[in-house]
Image (cartoon, rainbow, N blue to C red; front, side):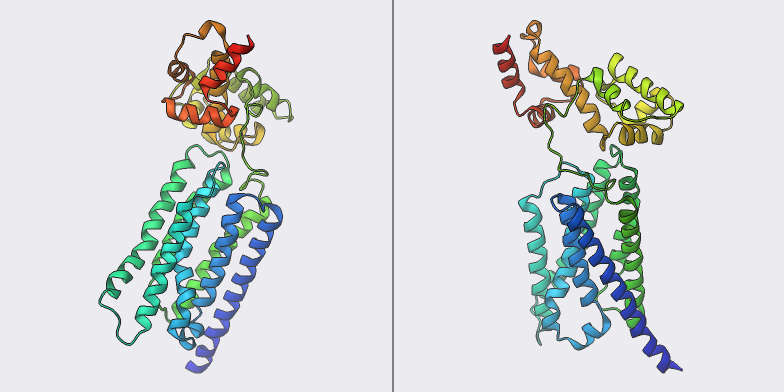
Length: 365
């Protein structure tokens, strides 16, 4: 009675893991084909590969038959996957994301600590420091889980892509599931459950990505703001509105949004948010997000609003009548809360600092 059952578990486990590996390979191949230059896609590909190693290394037969010392690389990569997931979430929700040295250092440190722990515990007489280093290793998933949630939450309110916003909730679920199953070697039954849970997570993520073709989750090109890419407030809504043939309700909302942003200069409010703007327009928040994203082509609310603010600031800096007005005053009047973010956004959009921009325009006049 127990023999058929004991034989069935390895077969089911192998089937689930084989499906999971195939799905991860499909995702990685699709990302490499469609978005090879995007940081979010690159991070996702590396995460897929790391997860493949984790799936293989956590197979019960692999853990049983392979010496602990040879399992060290698999375990180290499995633990370090949480760092990859943190980087992936940052890249997914921030269209201006760029890889930084800290990402590589964090990944390398987690790999090193995990690998050393595996080697220490495979020895006949583990070092007294092994318990300390093992505790550090067990803290890694929790620490990076918190960092991942913070990274997602930072952009969640201003993100206009509904698929990515829904991904925040799924991110929390994925973290909870993975943390709940990080308990060392699992029994055959729990290993099967773990593989099934991971397969469900990857399957849902793959379904969303393949269904939307990646165009909603990932931008089609790298985000490199220029002066030409930030239109003047008087035309930004009208030009985008002319590209589609919306229904009457959407048309009225677009006109109301244009009036509030252009004529009433709502962008000058420092605390402007999607929620406050939706309240001002007396529409549900999701409708305003959909209009700005799908009709006007913006993926982030702050970037959308900053387009108006930067155009306002450029106009003021180029105005000979306002040459005596301090740059800080112009930034604050345009809606920026401090000079630092204004300078960075202005330099990214124009390639010049506000002072350089004013100097060049003064020379031309």
